[in-house]
Length: 86
Image 1 (cartoon, rainbow, N blue to C red):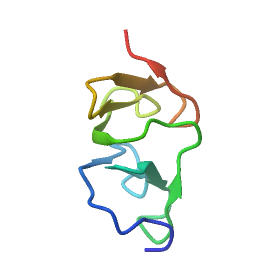
Image 2: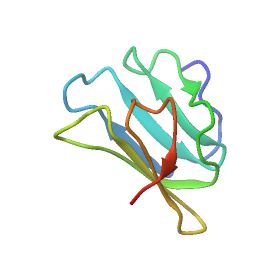
Image 3: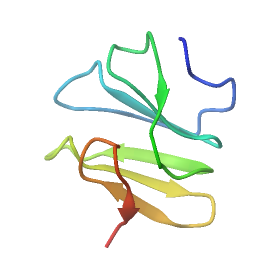
């Protein structure tokens, strides 16, 4: 599992349209795999201290994350860009 830090995984979400795409929430931020967990990369400009992550079942390109300070952020492009969820 290359690229995934040894920190505690706080949350885990699987893309409902492609089980090889997964996101994990850690203190270091969100990490994503596109190959079923063989390699992981941190999402660019993503939040830190993430407690939970979820993928929308209707729109898998929408990813939500909640941080330890209570902030909820959303990405509409699979985790490439993040903004405050409204």
